[in-house]
Image 1: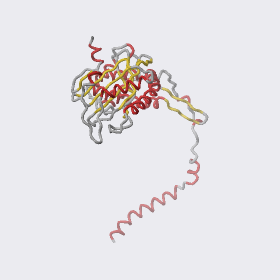
Image 2: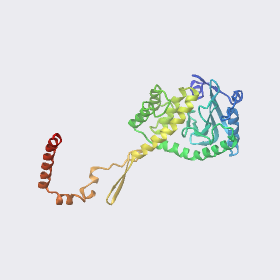
Image 3: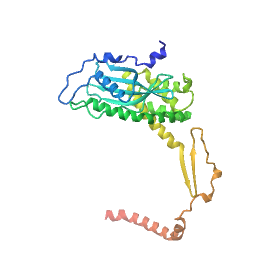
Image 4: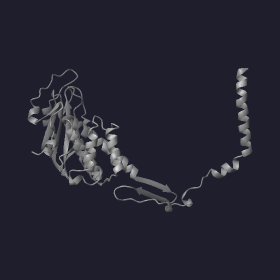
Length: 323
């Protein structure tokens, strides 16, 4: 196995360990209380796979990481559903120490580099870990919601591939992610790694200077994190890049409205239309409707007199107060 393959998996270190699905069954479930009912990590995975099978979705590959005490678990299930260069997947998490709720999220894995990515942060299921939790019903509802998210995610990936970036835009996105802490919990020493992976890509698929290449630079760098931290950072990355993508789109499409004219200035995706100064003349701008009235009603002599009266009043005021 080469070093890149090793790096792409959930390698265990720094207080977390990678385990198989069968090993999940060996993790003891703590005693429940009146208000909190711990859930078996293994049972959750089994229920999730069953819910997927009802929708003709098959798990092609799965991997899991748990904290050293076994209380926290993260996992990813790659499905038999593909789109251009990627395979859809589902990310899951659970904890039995009340640190986080059972949650799922939609995701995908990139074939060329084995990077995993999520559409956003993990969304908790309908209930907390209480005795009233109906695990089968809650997971089924969550799977339906995630399944509906696959098509929008596919569209988002295509838009990322088409979203060309300037060097300044890339540096700003990286800067905000690490120095402004827009991706919570990501160590700053990864910033240089993300920069190098983007500007000096290791895969031909990421040579184009676009948001898709930048996303994979982030997710490749996150492989250096501990397994549980990698899951958390990758989920937060999806939400961050979605906001960055929306902001770029808003900047690139500026609608300028003038009397009888409407023009769009696009500065991205190879569709640039410049609004040169020759496109404007004085007739393009509306007249100021208040200009005539101002000249008509403004009395310069009366204004000077009012100012003089105000200055005299300001001088008399201290004398009145002293008296």
